[in-house]
Image 1: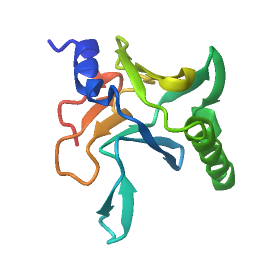
Image 2: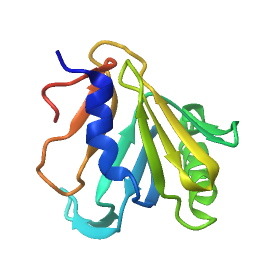
Image 3: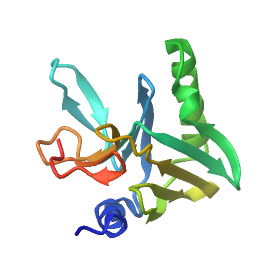
Length: 160
């Protein structure tokens, strides 16, 4: 049996020391880029900048600074204008003081995690645990490499 905590920490440990290089959203999904940005062409032929690693979060999450909530998944829900404004606010919070680097990754039992970032930020991801629903995924953008996916609070053996 796979130890979810150990597997999450093993997979995401590559982030330690890397800078958070991008903060965006796709509808209500939080999308984070880590490491140096590079250009890739998406399936529509459009060039875009991506980091060495990406974390896409579709479950509950909370960004804290010194124990105070700065943002949650609710900030990306609602009309597009609200989501865009919230994403710009997150960019300002996380990137305005210079890039935040990942200092530590700690996994939780049901596939959740804490990313401790420099400048006193903590991102906590809490899977919803709904069977069949994707909670979050971690991958190398622009690559055909397998994605590491948490679905329903468990590791999805199928990846992508």
